Image (tube, rainbow, N blue to C red; front, top):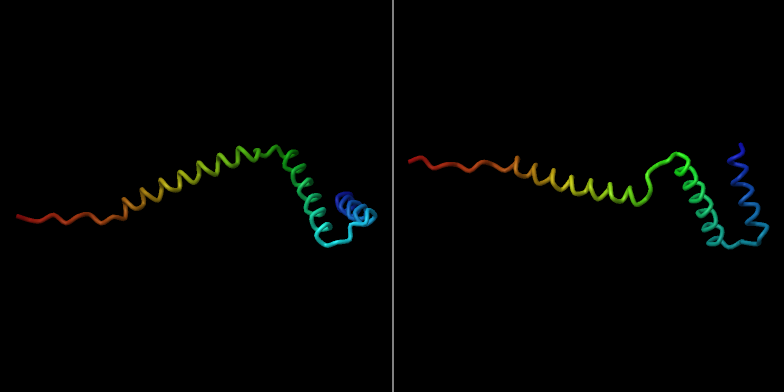
Length: 83
């Protein structure tokens, strides 16, 4: 209940400040949700953004290598001429 109260309090604060345009409201909601997401990630001790990017690059390289190996395996053997 306290988490939903937090979001409602933030929205009420926005209305008090006079942010009535849709773009302002949506950007503020997105900022609130991003900050809460970052807070949760920090608490869970998940990898940082940089570490995640490095891991994604390594995965891409490995996927390319796997594709090359699969192509080599799928390649039909050449027929040898008999004398």
